[in-house]
Length: 249
Image (cartoon, rainbow, N blue to C red):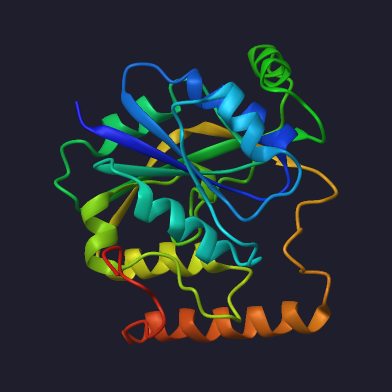
């Protein structure tokens, strides 16, 4: 069975990240590696990872505050034939990797797998989330079943060959919000099918500190969305991305 790389980007969220790691350890029926890309955390993240997950691939560098750069560092360190993503404050459901892998394992690099998410709040632990889920007490994300150009980032699993051919996250300075939707749309417009598992595969945490990459500046928000909207329109018109590093770059 091929290895699935779970890439987690993080910055100063050691507590949430510990719960995310626990959820990855609960994956069954697949071979996986955990890759944590740390954006220069100062809260003891490195020590926590060494203690909780000593075999994890841990990549760290000076803080840049740009999600695309952080995730791309992790992607370049990953060695799996498939790559899945998870935010440091979110978590995977048990069997999440196996469910998605089963959906695209025979597609020869022509499809990515995606799914929905159950919403958790604030400091909910992985054990608490599981207990609530088993009792049907968690709300579901809208999941975007109808519009398959808009996908839940924690639910994405993609063959490595797709990234090698069509690129990874755009590192343009203006794209600090929406970099994930730009990438999913780019892959879709390249002909990669999004195969939806029709079940939740992640726990998505809602909390008050989600926008922690200097997004409080209104100018950054406006600039980001203007840039994202422009490049999404370019995708629709068939214009190739100009600022997207390839996986081998």
